[in-house]
Amino acid sequence: MQKKFSTVSFFNNAARNVAKNRRFAVLTDETGRLVAYC
Image (cartoon, one colour):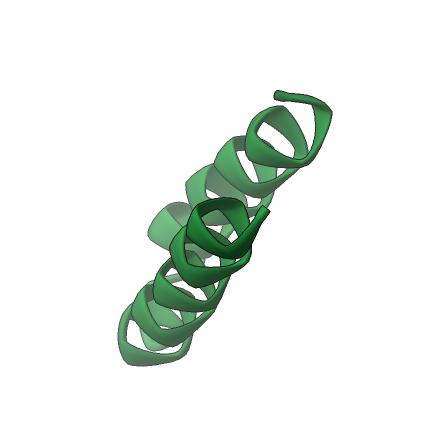
């Protein structure tokens, strides 16, 4: 579980850094959903 949470936090940090680009933001949202289901 800890590994999953760490990966989610990593994606969240990446999303913030890439939040400048809306295209990447959408991709991060989709990947976030996939990671949540995994």
